Image (cartoon, one colour):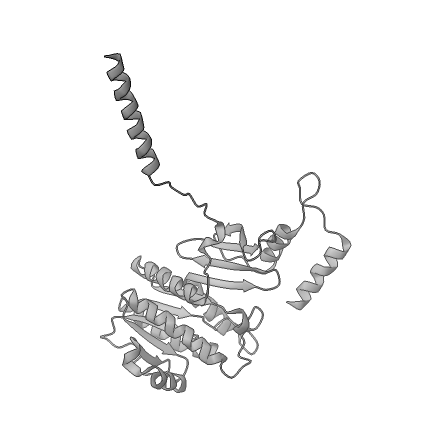
Length: 294
């Protein structure tokens, strides 16, 4: 009996060993904070469209999307079109965003700053074949009684502010959401009166930023937001080139002196006691020079 029992136990143990050997091994990959940052421009556009679609499904009536490409955007003056084909690049980004919204189930009417741009893009993209309607902010029947889609303003400028506001109000009255894609309404206040600035700020204040990728070239970082998440500040990881570390999260967009102070604190080296070291005279001078450059 003992011999048979030992044989049975041996057989069972052998079977269990074989099962363990055949079982697949799970590999746990540790997620990094910067994994949510896009790998490239198309990845960013797709993510922006998904976040905006999610916001609209939750009842957000007005969305702002900021896809700011470093070579086409300056943190001080806004959009920079130094080359002849730069404006077309901006329109192609807009086209990709519209098409991604359509793939997510939206009926899109894309509104461009003037009739000339709308006509040129309609001819270039094949009119209705591009998957969405193309219109101009100057069109009289921009939002008719039968409108039932998503109104997307592509790079609206300060001169079209009143028309954008009227169309937005009309669309929202019909229960239709509005998206401002890379708005230029706040780029540069030269020649803009106080009342216009107040009207612009009040209008933008009612909108929800559903996606924003804003580069900070002066500190090798970026301010990032993807709805429904908070604003996040990323800085380049000096110990691992090509990666970024999350500095902090914010309920409101970090900007101005507040942002400067946060970045400065994050970049300041630690002292022997583990606390951030006091800036040297040279570091203070470099900070002043950096501010002047911005």
